[in-house]
Image (cartoon, rainbow, N blue to C red):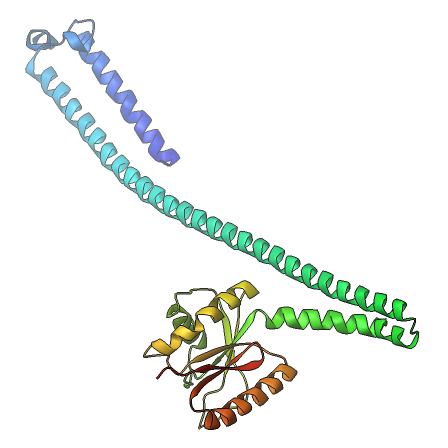
Length: 291
């Protein structure tokens, strides 16, 4: 906006210009500026009067010209300011949309967790009710200790553990490097399966110069984990990740059982060479090899 001093100059130029026009109309003996012509201007008088009027007009024009230049600078500044404000508004709108999207995902994820948790609780409660019913039917008072407070707490802890493990995946065989970006590495593995979820990954276990440590990857929901595990076998068909293996996160007890199954699988593979052996749902399965 023009300053008070600049505004006063603008008003002064406007007043002087109006006064110049009124005096000229009066001296030419016409009613308005539109009636001015060569003949009417000759009525002003001698050349001295005309020269003075011309000089006055030139000075007024110069002042108006300077005022226009000054206003042009202000207009340019206003335009630059408007562009900057528009950019700021656009950025704020983008941030607002991003925040809304993030809030929506957080609410959706929270609802998903609540649903999974309550479903798990209901399932375990039903199991406890059935156990209690069996105790009542059997008439065994001693067995009623199985429905103790400690038992219920144990069930709740187990539910929480299963919920946490259900949102994790273990990655084996992923090369380990110094100062590596592990989230980026995991994202590249998942992208090879056509998946681009948001992940949090970290190496677990002690460092070893001879082998890469496994990677624990956490997702927002167990459904994403199941979707990725279904596609994990496709990694064998890729050149870059053919030695990378994905597995669900397991409890210590489940890991011990899995280790026993793997050892048994290796033992039988050395004997049953005409069969293709694999582990499915906690059991060793076999298929006849095609000849």
